[in-house]
Image 1 (cartoon, helix red, strand yellow):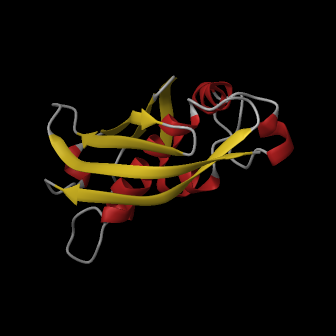
Image 2: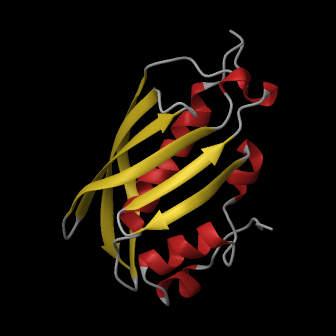
Length: 154
């Protein structure tokens, strides 16, 4: 069973980025509390690629009756940022400088399980770039995003 909380900076510095992200995916490290709030999970992690899933519910609806874009935005920010994190050496960190998303199809509770996959496009010494795709169970593109992350020493 997954737990929720934070991993202290000192503990994170003892792990490579990939060890950290795999720990989130396999449950040996706690997921952040926004994952509990929104109901998403990190289900796959490898170097340069992370997958996050969620089951949209009525709790995610906006006033128009579709799932609020913030759910997909948070999932993309998480999977893309963690994909960059998965490439970092022990002691290094990263933070999102900017991200952009484009909504392609509406998401509703009837959409079923959605999957956000983040993949590193380029990882330099100070900047990493990744893209992400939110798809439904049929593989249809729902939302697309890109991010730029700053990479820094512990």
